[in-house]
Amino acid sequence: MRVSDCYNFHDFRRLAKKRLPGPIFNYIDGAADDEVTYRRNTAAFEACDLLPSVLNGVSDVDMSVTVMGQKLAMPVYCSPTALQRLFHHEGERAVAHAANRFGTMFGVSSLGTISLEEARRISSAPQVYQFYFHKDRGLNRDMMARAKQAGVEVMMLTVDSITGGNRERDQRTGFAIPFRLNLAGMAQFAVKPGWALNYFTHEKFRLPQLESHVDMGSGTMSISRYFTEMLDPAMNWDDVAEMVKEWGGHFCLKGIMTVEDARRAVDIGCTGIVLSNHGGRQLDGSRSGFDQLAEIVDAVGDRIDVMMDGGIQRGTHVLKALSLGAKAVGVGRYYLFPLAAAGRAGVERSLSLMKTEIERGMKLMGCATVDRLSTSNLRFRT
Image (cartoon, rainbow, N blue to C red; front, side):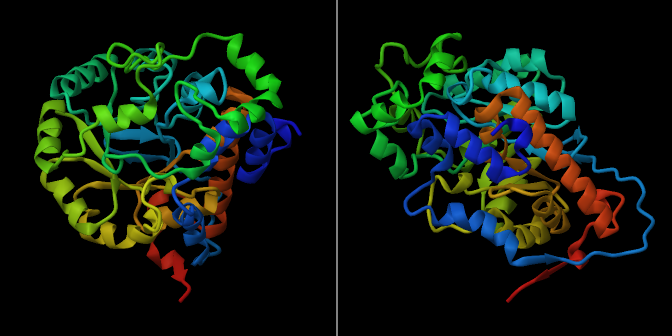
């Protein structure tokens, strides 16, 4: 199977599974506890039906949107994710190139494997920095200053990860950074020598945003210890309000799930929120971002840009979210499996397929522009 034979999320996932060692595939694919929320994220869209409007003369479609002051050529952006160099040696470089080609937003994580500065050199598309809040307030200030200097347009603070989720697939294989695989994990690497050849014949794995703060090379600090020792579980609204003020630009909270928290985000000056359960990787049993979208948009949608992520696998999923008032939607696994399967070519193909699906769907819905989509286009099953 080649990347050109992939036509949807499931095709890319199958190809990635063939090419990745089991521990790395399961790191992408896995979620917390019983993975109920992971499954629910996509299932939520299936309880919502589209109602097309016909004879509207839709010959051309404009799917561009503006979110947090950024003009996107399509209403889908690549959510920043960690450790992309593990999945393919091109890592975030592939995503930056693809986002630039399709004119959409992308980002680099605090646990990203290229620097904020390099990502900006690759792409002129809007860039976000997915930021984690550290106990060291000076470190937080330094990292924000670096992001601003690099030309990052949007600060995206992750607020649902003050501790790591219970990801049992990783525990079974011993997956960690630096690698501390158990025998079962090592055996899965042994049967995928192509990945190892690719990984070890390219540049050394790095975490540029953290390397001056965390010694990954000597093994003195693992990713799990980074979360438990360096991140601050006592982070509160006053801390975030201070960050918003210090940043002085577009500031987004990722992981908002309630109306009350959305209102507080407005009150402290945020310009965007992402309804997200971290792809089901944190609190299992939580609701999907799509299920929470309508009530949060109704409460604050006229005062802050509301986005969502989680479970997006089709253009029709995007149309349903936009119809409920989302300004844009984020994807993670949707581009990570293509990245793992084929690097830049995979990410570009996945975004091209998504763009085609959205354009086709808007024509079939009778909507030439995104602002024509509304709740009148939807019915929910009871």
